[in-house]
Image 1 (cartoon, rainbow, N blue to C red):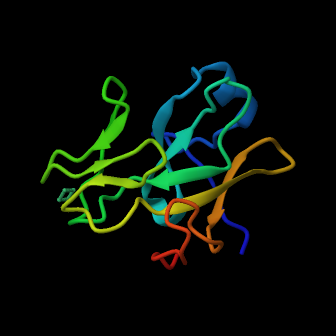
Image 2 (image 1 turned 45 degrees about the horizontal axis):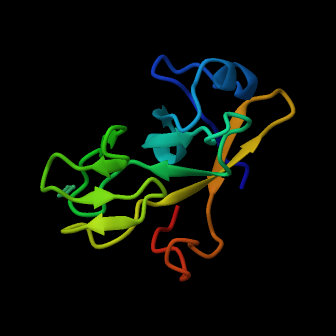
Amino acid sequence: DGGVIAKDALGTNIQKKAYLDSHNGGSRELVQGLRGDATYLIVTEDKSDIEYYALNAVCTHLGCVVPWNKAENKFMCPCHGSQYAPTGAVVRGPAPLPLALERVEEDEAGNVVLKSWKEEDFRTGGEPWWKF
Ligand code: FES
C-alpha cells in the first residue's frame, strides 16, 4: 500500500522542506491524512525533522476532532473532556484508546506521505487497535 500524500486545508500537497521552514519545533497541526481524516503532523522539538509518526485526530471516545492545547501540552477533547499526551497516549478518559498512529515518510518529490501503521503501538506496547 502506497499511502497518501498529506494535504493542507486547500488540498495542496505538503512538501517536507517547505513545511519545516514554516513551522516551529513541537508544532502539531492538522493535515488531511489517511481516509481524508484530520491528522496531526508533528515537528520534532529541535525543528530538524517531521516525526516518523502522525496522529489521527479523531477522538477514540465518540469521534470529535481533538484540538492540540499547546499551553497544556496535551490534546484536549472539547466534547467529553478526554485528554491525550503529546504522543497521543490517553491521559484521561472517557477515551478508551490512544489516538491512532500513521507512519510518516517522504516521497522522491519531497512530499510528505502518510501510510498505514501496522507495527506495535509504541505507547501501549501492544498491537494497533485501528485497521486503516
Ligand atoms: S468524543 Fe472526545 S471525549 Fe467524547
